[in-house]
Length: 492
Image (cartoon, rainbow, N blue to C red):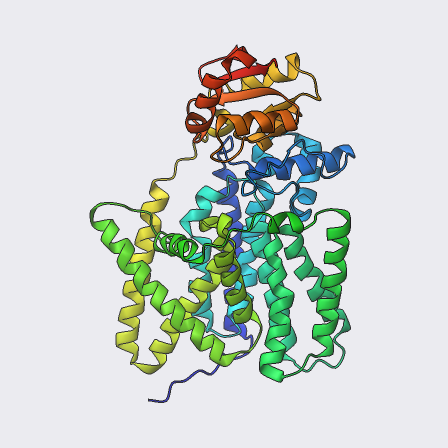
């Protein structure tokens, strides 16, 4: 059988209608997500470091002066600084609203909505209008975003810049070789750097450009030299002046097989997280079929090899496997729209080659099951305030006591040091990972810690702090306690 891989026709009236539909979908999604924002913030610490950077920018303080002290015995927690673009986006919001988490969630929501018409424009270069709309609908309705939009994190901003960079690259290579590559190369380099300045994983974009040209043309064009050069200059300036990537390398822990298993599990929960009943069987059936079809769609587009998109997606996947501390659904967000694109691409190829009725039945059945999973996930969402996290009973009281009764230079040891530093403006560090009491005591002495915060509900405190308090109780004095937190002064 001769498989047909030809591309779709150029932009026509049908495609323009599809683009207007994509814009309308983006507006609906933005309005819905903004309306469904939930109060509060979960207990993760990444958000607090980004906000601390934004606060420093708004107050004219050094970017890195967040109060967070990196523990050399627990480097996997976090580097001392994060890339600057997301804090820069948060700065005017923080200046205007302070620690209003509903306001700080707006940039991520708007960037997610903006990615919808942009993805349609990109997908339309290889798919018919209807199929392109199906792919962007799968992205726009992805249930994970309904929950994730309540995190003050850069991933949705990165996803927009990542897609924008790949769209610019597709425009460039559709007219390759470019006679006057300067303006387009400059824009591509700046947008690629913007992705890198949002999340360091953006480093794969210049790598994808070089790899694509070497593999396809066996040479490096002026466009690639200019684009990668602009990216390189901006990235070097960032590393010298604001945020150095060396801190990430200190966190590197190779465990690719375990990491691959975690990401595979994330893919099985892509459409639904059901763990029981008939929906669990639907979840695994749909996920298995979608993964196989997406792999086939990726190979189809790799055979076409029309732009660096497939190289970029592959390099990003390799980076995820090597970067074990980042395992989880959050980190695969940038490749999810392409997962849907490859899925629909494979269905489109089947539609062209195995007969319209059979292909239509297969496509309709799979899409119906996917949207059934989506609906069941959406029904579980409740726009009620986030339980726990910074709303944990007693946390505000603890922070008020620390702010009122301790000195700004006092150093704290706490399981969530970045969160404590954000709310109290006090320097803080985490205790050593799996540390025995003597190691924790020595580390507290090394950083001149004055206070220790203990809990009964945070993972790790029971295994690490209870033995420490038991063995060194004579050198600790409890100065504050409530239902969930105890504050000890180190009196040695």
